[in-house]
Amino acid sequence: MGGRLTEDHIIPPGQGGTDDIDNLCWCCWWCNTYKGTQTAAPDPHTGNVVPLFNPRQERWEEHFRWSRDGTRYCRITRYE
Ligand SMILES: [Zn+2]
Image 1 (cartoon, rainbow, N blue to C red):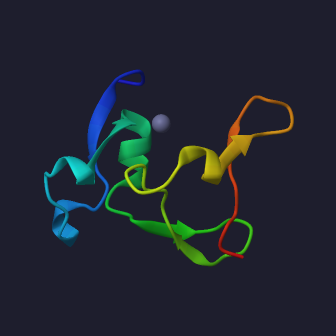
Image 2: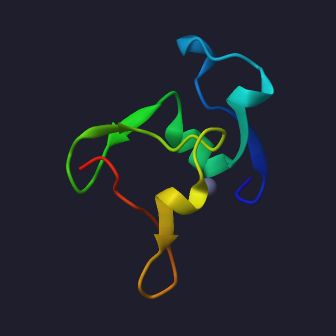
Image 3: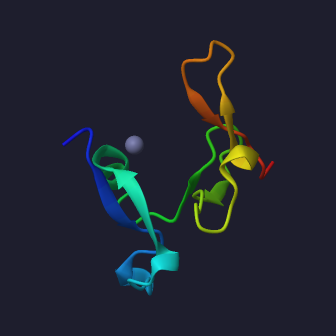
C-alpha cells in the first residue's frame, strides 16, 4: 500500500466536505491514514493549532522547503 495514491477529502465528509474536485486531492495511503479527519494540527514549533496545508488553495513552495541536508521536505512555519 505504501506507494499507492489514495483520494483524500481535504475537508472530510463528516465536517461538510463534498466530493467536488475542489475538495479532493491525491494523498499517499500513509499520510491519508495519519491525517484521518483532521483539518488542523498543532505547529511543532509554536504549539498553536494551525490549518493543514490545502493543496487546492495554497502554493506548495510557499509552505515547504528542503531540509538543510536535502533529505526531507519541511513545512515553513507561517503562523507564529
Ligand atoms: Zn505521504
